[in-house]
Amino acid sequence: MTHPLIDQFRFTRREWLRGLENIPEEDAKRHFGPMNCISWTVGHLAWHEQRYLLERAQGQMLFPILNELFAYRAPMSTPELGEMLAMWRQVTQAADPFLDTLTSELLQNDLLHKGRSFGQSIGSGLQRITYHYWYHTGEIQAIRQMLGHANLAEYVGDLEQEAPYRPE
Image (cartoon, rainbow, N blue to C red):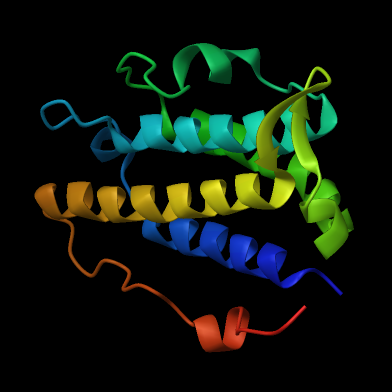
């Protein structure tokens, strides 16, 4: 059985994707003042998962461009939403087998990069990514409201059915 933290993480991903439903490509590339556009945010979250769950946890790097264009404090850009979602899907699919192996014991292991510890466990890194998703879920919904989108997803979705609390 998957660890409860992984269930919550996957629920978070699904909720984030639900918030991206029916966004026209042109709307995904709109900037409001200093805010990044929605398509950039998709690349940014792909970067974060790649950084923690592939690069640091497994020594894998699928898309070096994510480190260049979508890292924390990377300059504003306006990528294509479809391209960013495709990268995000590849990163998350590559991360999923690793997530399936995680136990309470493994989640306490250091998250390493090139053999060096950052003082963060795999579990803490996973929580950071989870909270990062929720932050950007709200931001995307705010952008969509500014764009005049109607009938936006309400949060938090069907938590009780999809990812209810359960002990380890």
